[in-house]
Image (cartoon, helix red, strand yellow):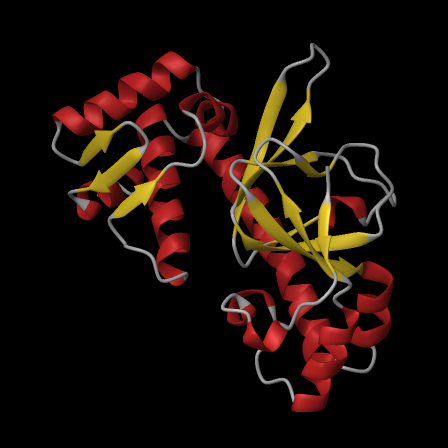
Length: 236
């Protein structure tokens, strides 16, 4: 079930600096606020959009955590990414006007609905918005290249270390701790994203704990030695 809240102000949102372009004039901000159609609540396990649905909007994550996934030919879900507050979802639908993945909430969340047709029109007049959209697309390309590197050339320890470092860096930008985090995804979902079996993920977590690199209590992870994680990813 989808719950929509018709009123929203971007100027008062704490995620504004992450999902909106910097340097907007007051009148430009007003026009962007008019463009944001509504805010939708998405319960844990529900989808913001699904594969095959008609593409018409981008979605800015206001609160909560999502995973994007595709279904393989044998019916298994392959996780393709994790999105958190301040990040944009739905870019996959631009190419063929329909979504090619599912975006599932890993916890109760809220998303802002951004009609893509209006974004295109407004981008022609507000150049900072156009540049921001291009930056979002470019960031997605860089992310996909990083995932390809992760899956193509890294050992299990390197993959998990890189994943934990990336997650904490993104959370730190949002004002969270640089050394402690709550994993919103399961180990099986992490394994799917990293191209590793659940047993390998569990074994690698255990190795990091025994080496004194991290502490783990259920889904709570505390990084004890950031440099050690970095050395795993980038050995000298």
